[in-house]
Length: 128
Image (cartoon, rainbow, N blue to C red; front, side):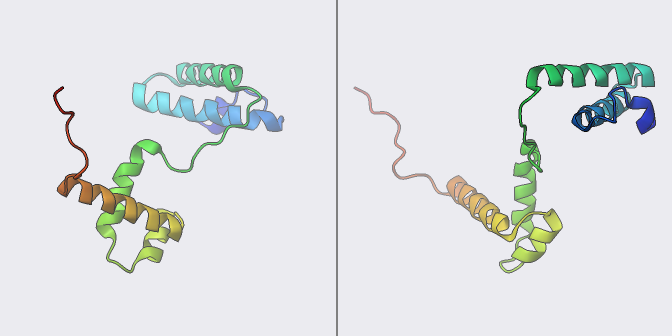
């Protein structure tokens, strides 16, 4: 399906660009994952774009660069690749800042320690 076929929102309107892209991406994903026709996929894409415009229309919405559900996997990969001095290389490879690499390494390190070492102050509740 071509980009022009999926465009059912007026592309001349700057405000419609996000909705047009949403139609395109939802349609392509629907066609790929569900195996529906191009026409049905566009219909689903348009319905999703219309719904998002109705629900979130007029709001300033920020989409984070990374997907939250993949952060843990990515963070563990970064930690596994970390050799003690390759902060900059990891930042470039994973398209994040060097400061973010430091945070990830520290976070995963603390998780690893917590798994191996029980908390001395986390006692079960006493019977009363």
